Image: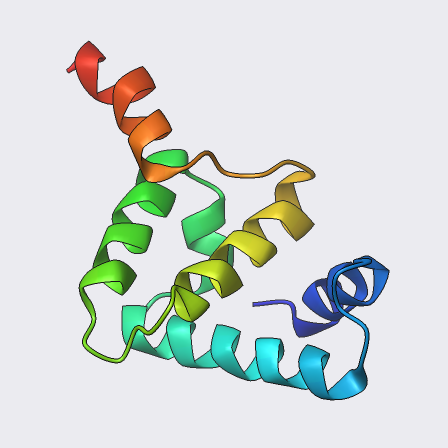
Length: 98
């Protein structure tokens, strides 16, 4: 994961107003990457992997209020300049093709 890229995205966000909040989100991102056992850069490069990673984080007992999923979503947005859809939206759009 490119922490500098994520930090810049977080610093530019209107909803994040303190250095403590930025550090907390960076810490959650590192923890989520560790939980998944795969570099965030590999995950966000493929929407299918992104979807599977979000599901895996959602099922993790350490996940509370979606903080680890959100950290991955922030990174996806930093890299891809767009938001990843909600899980239900992704399923509706992509899973019917299978």
